[in-house]
Length: 168
Ligand SMILES: CC(C)(COP(=O)(O)OP(=O)(O)OC[C@H]1O[C@@H](n2cnc3c(N)ncnc32)[C@H](O)[C@@H]1OP(=O)(O)O)[C@@H](O)C(=O)NCCC(=O)NCCS
Image (cartoon, rainbow, N blue to C red):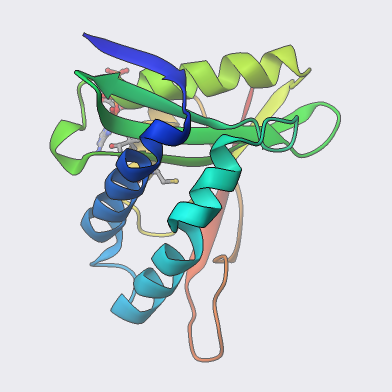
């Protein structure tokens, strides 16, 4: 049985594994190795994840995980970006376990909390060219709003992110 729950310290390794594997599976064709490695080493360290699973506030509402037999299959996190706008900050699955409805389960759990915080609109950033993420968000009613520079790019990198939103 797959359970969706708020992550604790015991899920840190699983979150890192799922996110790192999903990064390579999702972005190898559209981003450079240098960029992917830089982002992984920024986001998915044990010390950062420890802080993030123990932080729960409107802006960063802790990690939600999908767990089966104690194994993390997927992870996501959301937070408020203004009084009535929320954001899905991150959503990644074990690349072997996509298209089973797990992404939907995590998105629903994150969204429920954003609604409780007062969100009327939900935003998400998707890397331009992400053929796994974009069809999922469009199936969930998100609409493209605008394009902007990808997070954390440095001189010589020209990656773009697409901002999508949906009404809640
Ligand atoms: C995007 C992701 C989280 C979706 O999770 P998932 O568990 O595979 O999606 P679900 O099985 O819940 O699918 C939900 C809906 O999206 C659609 N969908 C999902 N992935 C799709 C794809 N690649 N192409 C077309 N439709 C897709 C499904 O058809 C389904 O529609 P339905 O509800 O009408 O049946 C997951 O595939 C993933 O981790 N992708 C790689 C990482 C990524 O891109 N994350 C987002 C970064 S912003």
